[in-house]
Amino acid sequence: MAGTGNPFESPATLSVVIPCYNEERTLRECVEAVLGIQDENLGVDIVIVDDCSTDRSHAVALELEGEYPQVRAVRHSRNRGKGAALRTGFGRATGDFVAVQDADLEYDPEDLKKMLAPLIQGRADVVIGSRFLSTGMHRVLYFWHYVGNRFLTFLSNVFSDLNLTDMETCYKVFRRDVLDKIQIRENRFGFEPEIIAKIAHLRVRIFETGVSYYGRTYREGKKIGFRDGLRALYCILKYNSHHAPLPVQFFLYLFVGGPAAILNLFVFLELLSAGAGPAASAPAAFFAAACLNYFLCIRVLFRHRARWDFPKEILIYLAAVAVLSGPDLALTGIFLNYSGPAIAKLLASAAVWIPNFLVRRFVVFPEPASGEWRPQASARKLGKTGT
Image 1 (cartoon, rainbow, N blue to C red):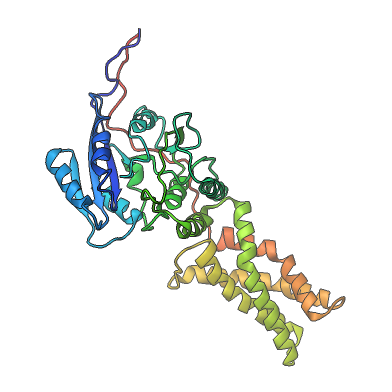
Image 2 (image 1 turned 90 degrees about the horizontal axis):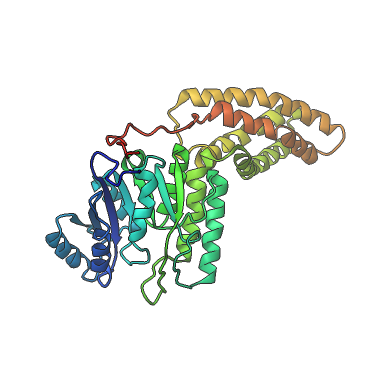
């Protein structure tokens, strides 16, 4: 027979971070509902981060801190956004696992116990709650929000190579040692696509489970809007592009290389019209385009911050440009025998497009292999459950 006792040496502890902005009506109920999931096998501590609310939210948080030893209240001196509030709360989390809980009670804290199961059992490193997998109760609300969520999730999956059903969900539970490896930069709702991108890069074990959802209308206090959707698109590109699957990176390179190709053509034609021959015009135009291409690759595709003081990378890039300029010059000369200068240059650029991308991706900007992330040895070990 299976034993019924706790299979772990000690209870697990869940730190729940509650970002709060003008939620005085629901904050107390939310905190008490989270505390209600505690049992002999699960301890809970709560970090409320008030993001400079203009109502009594912080006063309620302080009251709860005084009533419950598991509650800590933190306040931002100015409104900085949900992502900033979570960054503050994550820095104060001390539990084995860390969860996000909005203060508006759109999500049911009882679902956190279901999400914790694969984490406590050692089968998962991150568990994400999906509003679209659940068979539980869901409030019926905005169709176009649903479409927007589906689209953003699809795009995030394309870039992160995951198969999630609900990237924008609030409910995410992490092993704390996984969360410690991630630096959150987004201050507002861009946190959601950013954190998904970064856990995807770590190659952690991600599980997804259905959760109930009691959404609010804008009249009831819902805050996310169209501008946040645009920011989510930007964040999906920003935090995923340098780790995206190779076909996706090549697709993005079409847009990065486009301006460079236009500059290449423009400089080539200008130099020809100024009297320079193809032997001088083609390499000069190719080099000018390569400079723009380097900047765009850094800013858009392979890196997010230029490292202009990194001479080795620049030397490797210049060497690659010198090597590839040879085929570009030769092909331009060949095509000039059969077409005008503009067509010849465009055809030569197209012919070296794939080699250009491959050299930049694998030689100039090689990303370290992420491989399989190995969790740290757990302090708690499975005990015997009986037979």
